[in-house]
Image (cartoon, rainbow, N blue to C red):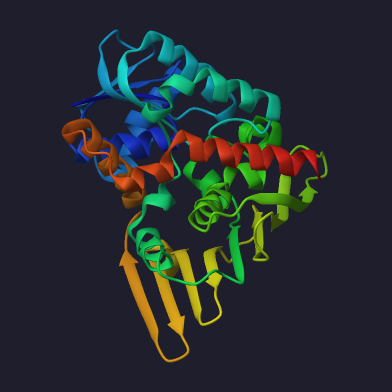
Length: 340
């Protein structure tokens, strides 16, 4: 099996490692020679112990046909690269790192039209939605009553991001410091909105209105913190979302309340070594801890795609990382910025 990855940054390293565990032949493409050197000499060996000589580093993609192409570049380059690669048609499937694209309604709509005939072959890297912990939650929700409340928080200081990208002095040095380029809290931490859209689909909720409060930095380039509440056309369920890049006591969790049950899922609990799922009823409490490493987050989605590539098996869980779900997230984020 063969894969081609565009972008030698942090994501490119994570996904290269996941694919090498699955025995893929890989080429990594980056127009920046220093990024390729940094991957080989610093990032990859520091994370995984030693450089893997079976990863081929290139400034331009080869003409070889591959099973999977991955776009792990900044969000404001995603659509151009994806459309170019779709035109080249040198791969069976494509994975674009989250967020799928920038929060511009016109741009998202144009992208949606252009990729229509490829939509079943394009996936987006919202890997928390294919984790064993989230899968366990979804299985239980299939038998639960309609919720009274659904809430989600994705609050995490982005110091961790800059620790993983030490060549960046701060947000202004990349897309991260510009919401219109796909940075800031809402876009960079759009995992939470993505998980909510999956839950809304499970309960067949149709968004009627949303109210948002967006707190920008002093230069008004990116959102430091964003609050959102949702109202539905066909339900009285309350739903809330909060995200930021300033909370050092990390809070990444989902909570669903019904009349008689409470479901909660915390990602990265126990200092990032576990995802913890709790189901409570009036008479019982079940706690499930799913041990993991950071590398496992990326291996979950790669295993699903590998099963598709090798066995032509389209696991039902693949729907969670479909480009259609990611387009919903992009539209919601654009709407939030337009109405705040």
